[in-house]
Length: 307
Image 1 (cartoon, rainbow, N blue to C red):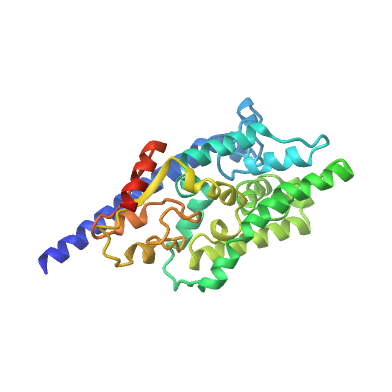
Image 2: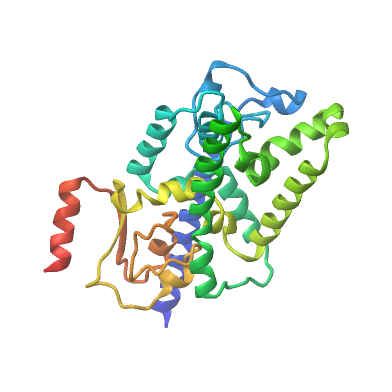
């Protein structure tokens, strides 16, 4: 009895340690890429040379504190500009982060992911999305990536000569929260010019924020085109999770604790896993490990699992 109680205390300590590490990563990166404090004070956008560089997460170009450009906004600008072209720099940067980290970018670096995580801590009854509905809804983000970010800007620009950044303009909640609302609060002229489009964006943001209270990371699960892009590299990324099947007692604690509802014992490196580490911290037999794995090591581990 005493041993079980001690194990629970130890688990609680590990959980706090994991959360502390995750929060430090999220907060540090949010400050790093939004460090232009004068922008929030004066309601002006930073225009320095670093703005030409993309950050690996959703971070609105129009955010007063943003020191870099949003990769999704940059993709749309390239596809929908007066001279549509393939943005090799942006795609190369995203592929680099995808190959190195996979969706760990979502779990450890994304500021809007942090917002959703904190909102979900509000102590109210949570909603468990039915498996069929959840499985179907997760494909929506791939449709948004293909249609709103790539195809629509590209085709419209080819025909009309220029296309709007459809995802940023009509859907992105990170842009509204980090860019639209702060600029509106600081600039009376912008408030006077705001119309139905801004009202729509605020409505979308409000729905996602409220949903985040009862569903863990609904935007990441169902709508984020950047998460969809990184998920394509999840299986091949250098940063991997590993389940030791010999140690595993099939208690399912990892699956019950997963914020993305991943079936950990079936596919621990699922495209939906944001690699937050919660499954690892709650495992009672320490059957889950994580780390950077080179190609040769991956093949060696695969051989050992098949023996």
